[in-house]
Image (cartoon, rainbow, N blue to C red; front, side, top):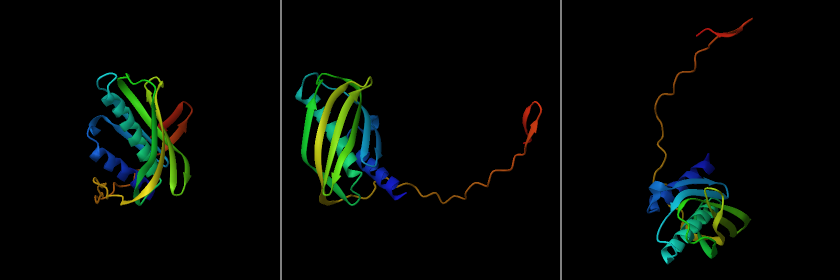
Length: 167
């Protein structure tokens, strides 16, 4: 349960800080992260390539941070290779930790379109920083309500023509 809470805390921290978080779907697991969003902007501009870089950096950060429970992680090295700078539309950014040798965490990230065509990829080297991970901005509500009563027993009888449920 503690691991799930850590992933939810990372997700809440990311979505509360992201400027256009309303159209992003974030999934975080141990050593992996995935963002579903949309790329847009002027074709061939520096801003369009920056959005590729930002998405890859964010997803790689989340994958690396999923392994570090106490502190934020910093990118020591992050290299992006953009294959299709003019692409606009829905994308999936995915990252996976390929080597975790404390204190280093090496992450590979890819940016693909709906058909699975590679748009950009990245390689990152992360280390834990001295900055403590902030608390969850949206803690899960504790449900103090009375639990529902147990399900009633429903007798089921086998007949020559099938099952009969006497409810």
